[in-house]
Length: 136
Image (cartoon, rainbow, N blue to C red; front, side):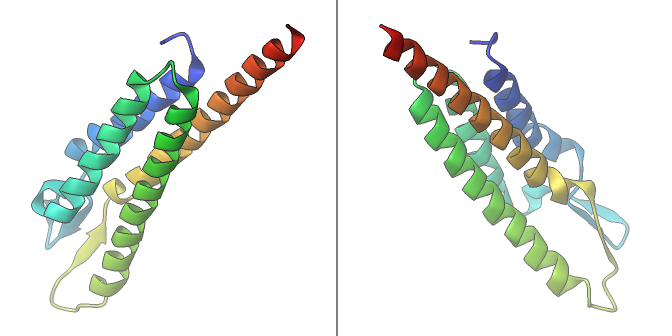
């Protein structure tokens, strides 16, 4: 399980969506950091992304299922990124509320990068298994 590179990439995606949002704020509003836990939508989406990454790690024997879970996780991360982009474009124009973007808004991008790398490694493993089966 851990000897495969896609598992390492999935662990990094798990950390990017499950651990780092507790550390890095999404944005600062009037000098106060705003974390993902203050919005139920962001909490649910980060939780689903973390759960999908963990399930993909645990289903290491089923490569096709792992591949599909990673695709769903990428779609979920893109939705999360779209919500962050929508929020940053709408709220940044308000004069009385000073808001700055935080590094936490870019965590879905980090997660997507690791999920793409994991899917490439899964595809490479699947092609290797198919080529070995062809030789038999």
